[in-house]
Length: 118
Image (cartoon, rainbow, N blue to C red; front, side):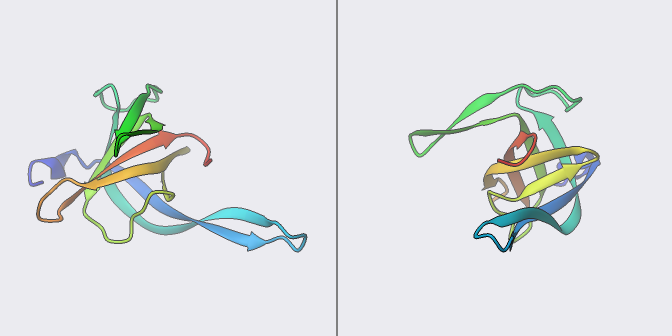
């Protein structure tokens, strides 16, 4: 991770979904800021993110799971889960898969879909 730290140049906000009852049996969804963090954003094609929207299917446990547009690398942090999202400037990245890529729990690699939350 030591060499990767210099690549963590994007300041992102980690957000968690909050559901508030609307009084009619449904709910209103909003996003709560959890923390700000430094990360690297890479399009799935492997080039640094510049607004392109590539795509790739993820094979996990023998099943096709989702289509990821970007990979985000950050320092390891407890509590990050699929279903959360990261916001960078006016762009939202919905987390669909994460892996602890450093064997010493020092790095998280997230596969994300850019766009509005599903």
